[in-house]
Every structure is written in structure tokens, then in C-alpha cells.
Image 1 (cartoon, rainbow, N blue to C red):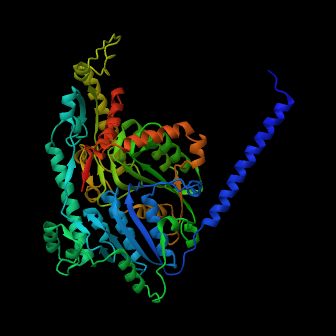
Image 2 (image 1 turned 60 degrees about the vertical axis):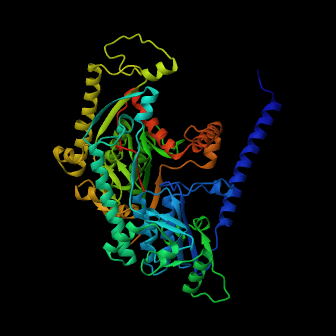
Image 3 (image 1 turned 90 degrees about the horizontal axis):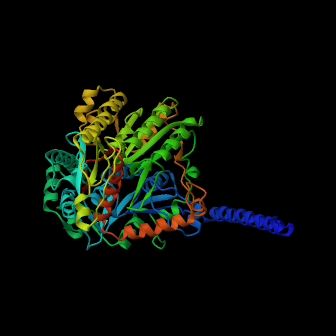
Amino acid sequence: MAISKTAKTIFIVIGVLVVLMIFSLIGLLIVAESLSKPSVPENSVLVLKIAGELPDHSADDPAADLLGVPQPKSFSSLLTQLRKAKADKRIGAVLVDIEFSGLGWAKADELRRAMKDFRDSGKPLYAYSELGTNKEYYVAAAAEKIYMPPTGDIYITGFAANAMFYRGSLDKLGIEPEVIQIGKYKNAPDAYARKEMSEGQREVLNAVLDDLYGRLVSSISEDRKIDRERVIELIDEAPYNAVQAADKSIGLIDGALYRDEVYKELHKRLGYAEEDELRTISEGSYKQVPSETLGLNDGERIAVIYASGAISTGRSNNSPFGSQTVGSDTIVSAVNSAADDESIKAIVLRVDSPGGSALASDLMWHALEKAKEKKPVVVSMGDYAASGGYYIACNANKIVAEPSTLTGSIGVFLGKPVLKGFYDWVGVSNEYILRGKNAGIFRETEKWTDDERAQFQEQANNIYYNNFVPKVATGRGMNNEQVDSIGQGRVWTGAQAKRNGLVDEIGGLEKAIEIAKELANLPADKDVKRVVLPKPETLFERLLGTSNDTTFSSVEEMKAQEALIKALPEDVRRSLRFAALFDRMKKGEAMMILPYDLEIE
């Protein structure tokens, strides 16, 4: 049916009005953003709150900020504010307000280093915490002064590693895991195949705890000027209330003070006139101050690519189970873009991943290998860079890890759940009609035949002996036998990995950027422009469906799913997160992932 001239005119007018409205909205947002830049009074105290999940990176979206849409705080933003505060003459001091957070031990190391770097400016940095365990106190100890309210408590009671096992539950449900694994320590399936730790797992956990405990003791001893043996005694006699901890005979904190009393201490320390009020600025406001106005994040361009979460094929996304995922399509595209951009002088890959799909890991490894032919590639490891996470890191020009990073885990496993008992229990029956000797290899109701198991064993051997081990050997300048001897699925801390050659340097993202500058022949005394990839979706792109095939309806669906998942206990969310990964094995996908879901408190 032909459209009348009147209808055409109406459509054109509506189209023009929509375009004008979009441009007007963009213009208003730009103006509002410029007006929203905070003024930072002289001698201000920056208050940084360390609480919540704190994902490794979450891009700021000015449009979302202006429209009042909540955005997750990120660890990278926290470190950026400390860098800015060190350079900003208007900031007189920093108060770090520590609550329970999702930081792992490696990020705790990195935050401590950033706090001490800020203190090198000569400005005071105080820590305040109402209640803390090992990790909160470990971070606080890097501050010049530590304060707690009189009713606060410190639980520096030493470490407990909790590894969970679900075999008992699966037995009750009639589900039998069928697994092939390579490596004495490659115990990832043990959570579903066993009811207790294997000897290999126990050996590694003890080694990891020894390393972390030794670092905790040494750090407290150095930071608080307490004899090492006395620190061990204090840990064994913990917990303490704030008044006890502030006593000179213990000396773990500098005072049992309420928050307003800590502000009075800073008021006096910064030389305020008695009648003047202490000027404070929150992280939320201070992050609106562009780094470039302080002489930071400017100059030659270096790409910083974030690979945070479990590894899978496809695009990166936020898992409904409370974590991010690393999609091979997304990372390969980001690496290729950075490699082809002549204005980008080096690539820093930030890996914070326990591993995942072997196929996806190899696709990313290949993209990084090709990128390395054009410019330096440096890896910065976060809390985890294990198994598949180490696979994508192993060919970098240099690898940087924190002492407490969990890395290595060079091994592979694959398998499937056998659901016959469960189906019998719930009254479900099924039949297969097959063509081909191995057509039933993925049957959920049958265990593998000897021939089928042999096929999968060959696949696992190929991934480990013909791909993983040789690629690590080439990347690290070792032979296959050396890699196999420190592989076998074993997890190492960053400090241990440096000693056995899996890591080059100890440090965080800043150290990795320094090395990247050196390899790219950039001046050491000049900052660089950090080009963060993959480019994040804006609020408008998410709502309008103009990026990554996301539509408004799918966003609403994801929100509803997320709300449901968040209502579950954390232990259940963790088990579902790993079960979702293992579910991919039903189609033959091999996995390279940490050998257990490990929680150290």
C-alpha cells in the first residue's frame, strides 16, 4: 500500500523531532556534566570507602551518573583516586573507611601498595574501621594511623581455608560425575566428585596458607613496629576489642575513637583554625575530577585490557551469579583493535580470572601472540590468573603478579554429569537411537564406555601435553619437562610463582604499566594515556539495544534474574556459578579452571 504524502511528511517531522530531542539530551548531559565537576577546597580530606563487591574494573558512565542510575564501585577507580590525591595539592589527607569488601588477598596487596605510595607524598593517610577481620586489618595496617570506635572489634585470628564439596548432595539426587583430569593437583572436579580433600589439595592449601600467613605476620610487624614473634602471639590471642587493641601493650591500633573524633584528629593534624570546619570530599564526588587536570593519564597511549571473571566463548558479560565473565570474542576484538592502532604503543592485559573454557583461552592466547609481533604485551595479575587465566598470560613479554595472587594451575579436565539416578528418582525415562560408534558420547544417562573414555582422555592429553605445556614453555623460556614439573594443576601464590619462573615481577597494574613503558621505549618520568578496552557499553546503548545485541527487554530480564539470584545465600550462588561452567562440558568443552572454589578468611 502506497504511503500518502501527508503520512510521509508526518514521519519525516517525527524523525526530525526525535533526532533533535536526542541531540538536545546529549547537549544537556554535556552541559550538566561540565557543571557537575566538583570544586575541591584547599586542604581537603578525601574519604575513600572500601566496601562491597569492588569488581576489578567498572567503567564510569557520565550519563548514568547524571540520571541517577547507580553504578558499581570498582577497584581500579579506588586506585585512581589515590593516584589523583597524591598529585592534587588541594588534597591534604586521605581517610580510608574500611568495611567488609569483596577484595581478594592480591588486591589487598595492591591497595596497600597504593596507600603507601600516597604516603610517600608526605600527606597523612588514616584508616578507620568499625569491625575487621584479617583482610580489613591487613589493609588498614598500611595507613599511618588506625582508629576504631570503642565498641569495635578486630578478628586477626589467623587463616582458615574453606573448600566446599557437593558429592554428598549429588549422591542424594542420584547424580554421578564422570570426569577425566590431568595433573596430580587438578582437583576442580573434586568439589563434585569427592566428599573431602585429596592429599594433593591439602598439600597445596597448606603451602598457600603458610605463604599468606607469613606475609600477614611480616606486614603487621613492619607496619606497626612490633616484633615478629610478638605478632604471632597477638594473632594467637585474638580477637580484641578496640580499647584492648589500642593499649600500648598490644599496639594494633592508634586509638579507640568515634568517627567525629577521628575528624578532630585530622582537623588538628592539618592545621585548621579552631573555628574552621574540616573540609571532606567523598570518592563519588572526587572521581568527577579528571585525571588529566592533575597531569595524570596523559601522553602516549597504552591499552589496558581487562579480562575479569570466568573464561567462556562468546562475548563478555555480567554473570547472574554475581560475577563477570571473560568472553573470547570480546577480548580477541579488543586485542586486535589495540594491536592495529598505531597510536597505542603497548598493551597491558589485566587478568583476574580463575580460568574456564580451554577453547576460549586458546583463542585469546592466539590473538595476544599475534599482537606481540607488533608491540609489547605485559600482563598484570589480580586476585587470580589460574589455569585458563594463566594460559592467556603465559606468552606475554613480561608477567607481573601480586605476592598473594593465585596463579599457575596448569592442567585440564573434562567430564559430564550422569543423571540416570536422578531421572529414575523423579520418574523420568528416556531412550536413545544412535548412528555412529561414539554418537552417544554425550548421553546424560549413561557413563562413558571404555572407547568413549579413551576418546576423551586423548582430547585431554592433547590439550595439556600438546598445547598448554608447550605454550607455557615457549612463553617462559623453559622446556616441557620443567613446565610439567611445576604444572600438574598445582596452584601457586604470586611470590611462589616468581621463584619458580612463572612470573617475572612482583607488583600491580602500575608496575605493569611501568614495564610496558620501558619495553615501548617511552620516557619513564612521563605518564601515559590509559585506553581502557573493551570499550564499555553506555547506559543509552544498553537501553536502546545499539551495542552487543542488548535490548531494553533483555536488560529488564537480566535485572529480574539478577534479583532472584541475589536472594540466594552466597554459598549457593558460588556453587551455581561453577555448576554453570561445568554444564558446558556436557557438549565436550574442556575446562582449565582453579582446582577448587577456594575461600581464605
